[in-house]
Length: 590
Image (cartoon, rainbow, N blue to C red; front, side):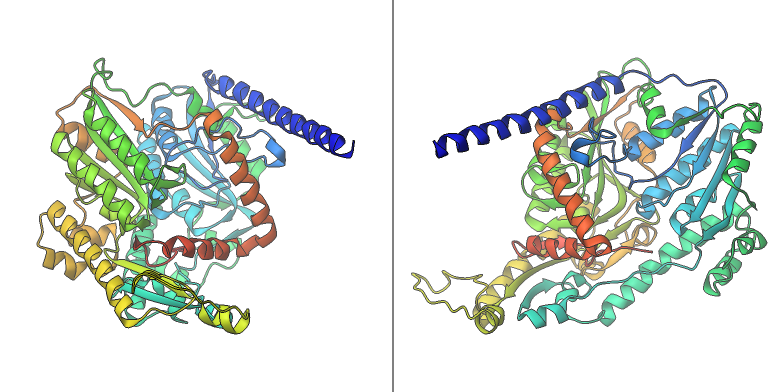
């Protein structure tokens, strides 16, 4: 009888859980169906742009966004593809009178911000207005907002303008206390991904390269703000260096903003600009809703169905398998490349790369497909915030490479890490091991002991071969000698502006510039841009999405600001599996 009630209870719980899941799936389908309907835009409207989440490369297929699924409600995110398309559409939309940049933190990288910033500059050519307002201006959001006709700050707000910085977290001290040794095998003087696990501070070579590329990013930052605000660049440098803006009034004094206003005052100004009476509500539409109202702005002419440009999105770490919306799976991206290569309707390919790299093997698998595709039709690479190490590996075979001046690229190098946990296991946990083996190297890679000199030499040879393959691929793709690529390789990181001078990048430009180049090379005037790989449907991604969202939610709640350290430690597990071609560290620039 006792067992009977156990089974009954388990069945009831299962039915309840499945019922709850089914309800949310139905809600998601309803939301998805509703999103297919075009949103109407009122006359004399303002396009309201506010960045509350990081900008992804393309809008995720997430019909559960804005629905309280298991209490994990989140903002509906919009991808860079739809942001750029919406701003472009608004430029010629008679219903839209201007853009309101409203309270944003710009959690995205600098190259992504650059794309949006340039789109706003193009929008202003329509003679429509752009007004920016925020209670807090981070440097990233101010860089974007500096193109506005008017920039306003809350009278009690905060204006951050102090220069760029980058901090690296070192784990060697913690590993020493745990009794873990990171055994490193690498090629590249500047390949510094391993440094946090074997050093307590930056090496001289790493400090030099960080100074170089951070300085390049800062010059781009200051130059463009100076141009937009009609200020002297040297004066901007001095304002930041001396921290002259410490109160809202200082931002007005140094002409960084146009005035101090509360939000109601800014809304009243927007009403006047759109001929709305002050006692009436401002007519506005949020960016995510406006994206649903846009037509097929990627189509050119009537022949677009038979003349397509494939936009393949490769975003995130590079690993084997299928990957997901936030990572690059070599199987999935390779399949997409094969599909467009064999599709006669696809006349050219734009590979959008936003990746710090990852598995060198997975990178080579994707490189091969890019190489084969280029033999059949034009392949143009558009680089995002990062296209470094493995991200550069998968890019180098293309016909042409576009990057933003503040793209992080290069980092041509290979490394591997194998932990030696003998002290942890023996001395701290009291565990010892014994066994037999049929070959001298049968237990190569065992973490319970250090590598022997012979084993280290074997792994070093493997990494050397990987570096040789990497530099050969780059030399072939860029029409350079392998010796030259080695001289600018060695794991060194470059900005897009630096990379164009040394031949790693062909042109500085946007996604749309890359698309235009692909169309020109394929001799297309009428075409349609089609996104790949195909995004998963709700049913395919529901279980995995809920599981990962729940896990992420509770880890962030528990760790708070320390969540980034958890991510780095978790990432170390991946680096210990196979040789890696990835950025030398988590490049978080503040």
